[in-house]
Length: 212
Image (cartoon, rainbow, N blue to C red; front, side):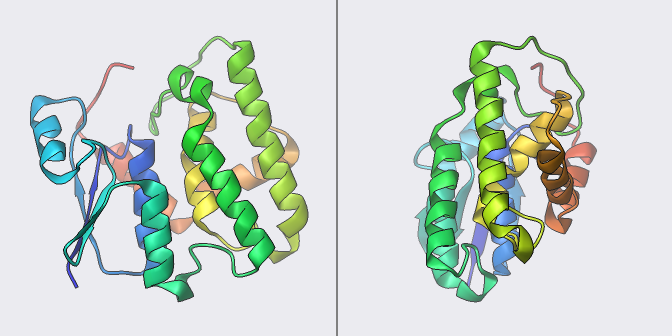
């Protein structure tokens, strides 16, 4: 089997972090090729491997899979024992729902709090941003209320939903967002997840810097 996950900068590409977390959870042997964003060379490299000119994109056994949720579904089918999604059907349906919400929503959070794993910034609050932050808190609280006995993550054991929200945890740290006690406990658990620890270290070591 030949597999390559093409990613953007660890420090700035939240979707690439999600893709890498999913691949690493799957246990599938996969090379991760990091491409610097926002450079002419980087844009050309991404265009050569991704039909959407975006990352992450997974090349495996002649297939090209270019959307993060599609990558999650493929890995779930290829490596079911890795439990990319929860085993219990109700939990699995909810995990897919909150992951899809993260995939398509939270525009104010994305635009007003750009990803910067190693940075520390402050930004003015807006009603739109506050609504996004409050909704994320609601998602975390509701998921944890149903699954807290099974482990420290949204659905007990780590799954794709946690990979989807891991960059949000990083953003909250970067911008000093104050969280409820339960949300802070969850955020700390995510920050300590071994694969995320590794990605944060890779982000800190990157030579590239972008003006945010």
